[in-house]
Length: 223
Ligand code: CA
Image 1 (cartoon, protein in one colour):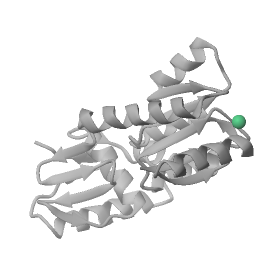
Image 2: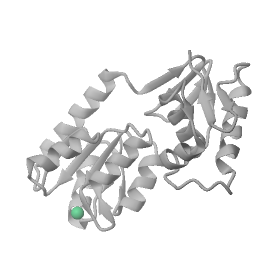
Image 3: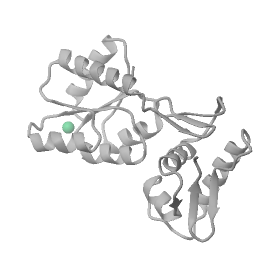
């Protein structure tokens, strides 16, 4: 597996990386929410091991945020917090499991394998909309079986559209949910990304999935 480990404590980070690599995984590490979130959103990871207490924020908030952005990569929280309400809070926000420190490395591996089995059998890693198919795990988009290369922004936009199909979505909503910024009417870049995405889809199909609703926003049409 390709695993992202977000942990600021160097001894834990080094140990987890070594154990996972020893067991045939490839591992990337981050020490802050800032770096970890960027990697989690852009990278091709099959698993994320996430510490809760990080120097620039709370792992719980990060987990919530990446789930809101449509990142479905399984998350195992690794934390010194033993309280049940913290564990429940993390699981409710989209974490897949929770392991308290100090932990046994055998248990860490077993839990990651269990998450992987559950993810593989759940089969909900694919979004389908007419001729369009999105593999969330591989972050791959295809139209009628043909793979279409998208940038991260275009991919995230597409995932948000498909998950919120057949309703009007405003630019404000896209700015907030996809880009995590406050919408500014002076900027046109949301329109620009939508036109890029529309163009790439239209290169492979006659159907126009993105409908512009005048003065309101957009609707992504899925039958
Ligand atoms: Ca920490």
